[in-house]
Image (tube, rainbow, N blue to C red; front, top):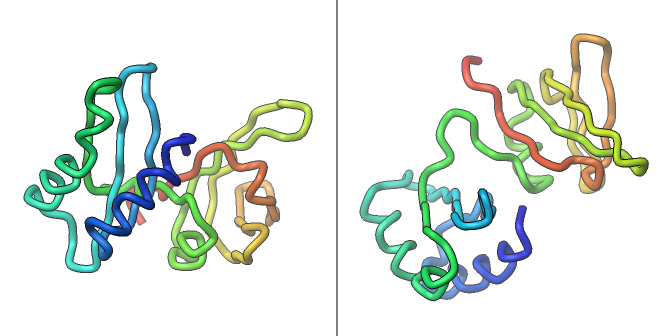
Length: 139
């Protein structure tokens, strides 16, 4: 998640209140990639409208707006709760800066941590250690 995410969330809350901003990230320093969702699904027209609302960012970034797809990003506790029983991949960084990845079935989620049944056992991970996470397509 980028520092722009809260700013974009506020903008869309006013202009497109039914749109959920899943992730806003700056990729390669020059592209602002935005993943959105909507209760009725994401259409090309919705992506175009959201792109129009984000015109102020075009002077700094190339803009990409799209649906989450099968490997939907998980960025909030509600996302993890919603997809319990599905497989996810979590990229982690601990307090020492060590990075690792955990893949498995989401079996629990609270406001502070997520529990995942990985191949080497069930682990509970605080959200602040998660750098990036997404659903794993195919299940």
